[in-house]
Image (cartoon, rainbow, N blue to C red; front, side):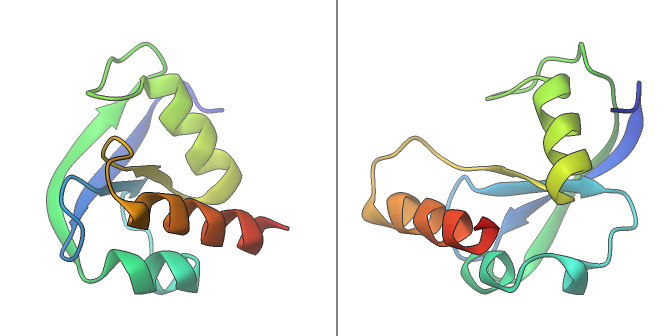
Length: 97
């Protein structure tokens, strides 16, 4: 895991309070098809220099940087209040198997 990395944050055009964190300059087409399909068109929210000790709304910098290193993205979803969250997680887990 890098000590710091430039990250771009995008919000979903389809799902409220759903964000994806990627390396700045990441090619959207290289992300998993299931993620792109459910997420919809990405809407740029911000760029930031992320360090492991930085606190974010629902995670910390270390969690985000580790996920990006492993999967090329970190997905931040709202609390599990709707069935789509469970379905979304199931589809991502199937893809990883």
